[in-house]
Length: 70
Image (cartoon, rainbow, N blue to C red; front, side, top):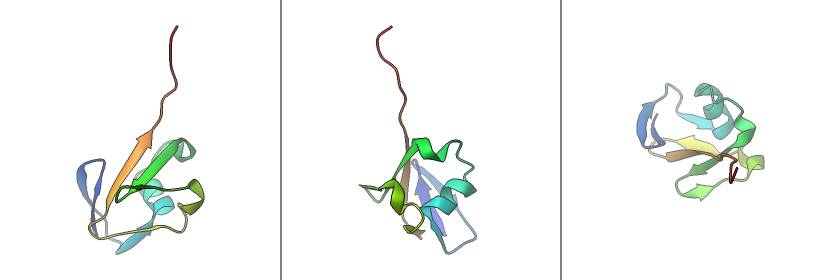
């Protein structure tokens, strides 16, 4: 399967992966701190285990950082 992750083409042997499986395959540190967008739709965290990523999909891992005035 070929998909785009954060603007980069990536290939996987599997024909489909759930978002949770994709996070594991990409070795994402602290996946509980990552929001995921698939084909322009931001997913609810509860949907990570059931949303399937397939050929041609576009996925964005969105990392939110804290900060502010010091």
